[in-house]
Image (tube, rainbow, N blue to C red; front, side, top):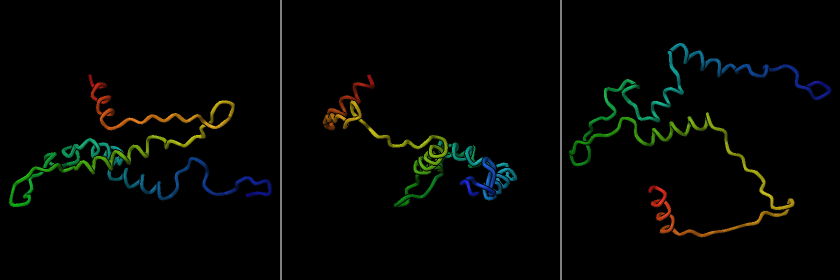
Length: 125
């Protein structure tokens, strides 16, 4: 900083740092798009990721043959979460004020589980 508090030296705003530049270079070298990969995982599309099928046959408990997804729901949720964290802004908390900058007026309404189910069913009609 100079004597007036202005930043001097360092990386120019908008230029990627060395580690990011290396990561981009490696992805380009291998023709790999990490966002596209995460989208395919989130969609559960194993065939587009190079698998023969979206499911795999395994031997389960007791010798029972079971079909399982190559990409589990947990994998899909994790991939979707990463995509959302990188594409949607975080929601920031805001101060709530009432009339004339006074304290907010609080209204509470209790809905029990049965009423919530009823409302959900009615909204599907």
